[in-house]
Length: 198
Image (cartoon, rainbow, N blue to C red; front, side):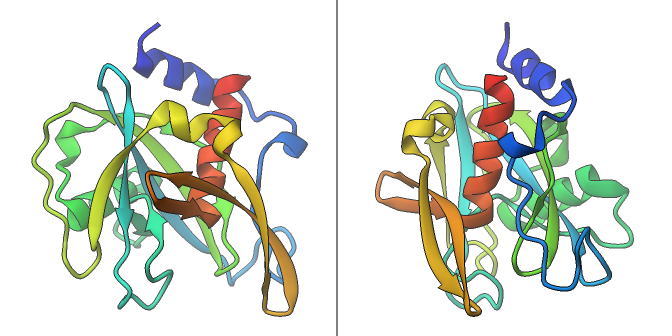
């Protein structure tokens, strides 16, 4: 089965048992969502190589939200966007210069709520190798590719904890090649891996 077919089949299966997928954090006073939750979307750009890779970005330290973190290209869904797919493709074009026509959109992965108030829809897309990408210096300090199989392997997905706003929060962390992928990005990778495994 091709990479595209494998990903498509995994995403088209219905939601699995809630205990197996990470929904994220519901903010205090907003059980089940609420006006404080902002819809957002990210592109999970899978490069179709002999050993598939995923493109990730490093956010500049100067950014107001999530400075210095590793993330997928993405952001809030604007009123002019025709849903999460359009938003993810627009953000990928703005952040890393990825043309929308180069992306074979496979489907939507499981939404994830961040502690900062975003409900993020991951959009999984496949792209060919060798594209000339142009990171926007104000939004992306660096971009790199990490092996998809490595990221999805539960052996590399470590559970960590930290105190945030007076509460102990647990989160996933994946170390690859000296880079620390954690928080929402790692959780979305873990969810994708669980769906592919099922």
